[in-house]
Length: 106
Image (cartoon, one colour):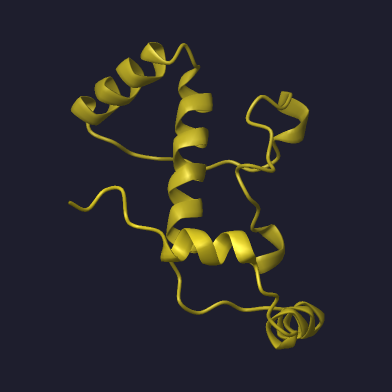
């Protein structure tokens, strides 16, 4: 899959009509896995396709979010560098929160 084909599950519509679905993924699973996945889909009142696509999209986003290396187009890299190079802005409330006693530590 090229970077142009990558998309965010948050941006995609898992309830899109069938005409928007123009790619197919075929899977082979054990009978036990199929039964488990069908039970989970039923528990969430989703079709098998809706459940599998939504679950796979969430997992894909987590995998990609945990990456240490990212590939960007030149224009995106330049925008990123500009954001990183701009001066820091002092945030008084953030400073107060960072210096406050931790409520979870005795």
